[in-house]
Image (tube, rainbow, N blue to C red; front, top):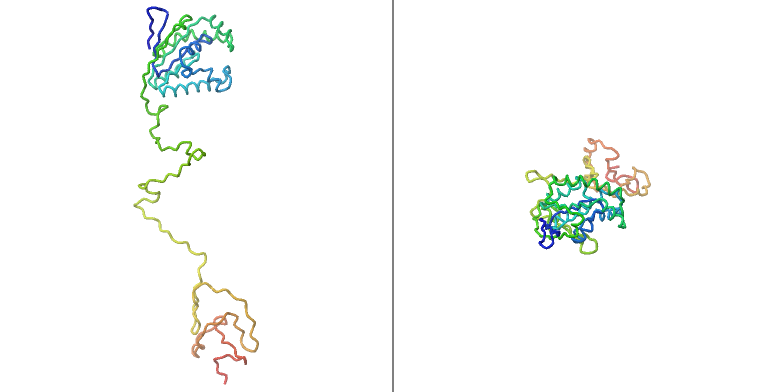
Length: 326
């Protein structure tokens, strides 16, 4: 970044800039910064604060959204530097805090930071402001021109790589030469893939939006063990759930009684018509199981209850079978 003068024209200034680099245009309103930038740089290389303010709040003259507008300017400058592009920031750059942000940005990317200082008389700025369609007014220009006097002194101690001062007669005689020297992007800078990101990340068209096939669910690799107890721990024993109700155990039977077969109880049928004639009460249960006649010794020793004693079937004469009635 040097300034050269040709032998034929002593007033012509040739400025050499490095791409990528950060270039600031510093000066009060209506000093000719935007006209200078449009003549020597590409429109895509210029990031204007007025342009950003219009994109944020639809009005480039609305000063209430300065924070949001300059956040957009800084964001675009950071993206462009990360892609090895030249950034020309078109703003007044009258505050040290504003200039420090772009100095730190250039140091972080290890690129040059150059500032053009437009030293134009106050009356010339006011005259240019009156001829523009969008005016800011004389009081604003006077206030900015007063701050600009202090800026010219402070800017020399702030650490810029080059300070290029331009007077009113110099702006039409400047020629810009840009030399491309790409930088190696350190990890984490814009325009570089983060280290943890892989190329297998699903693209937006793969999210089932209708513009392409949906991404299938990724299966875990075969060498990865499923979550569960470690190899040193014993697997918990899985016991089958017990049934809500168990079949009742068979009651103890006395001599001469039929054994109770285990299993679910048979459904109880409606009682049949009672048997007429004298004799014991009819058996309302289903067909009785064959029962051996008890011996006389078993009848005398085992106490019986009505619910446990099997009643022999009745004969037509009302006498039980199996007993001697002689």
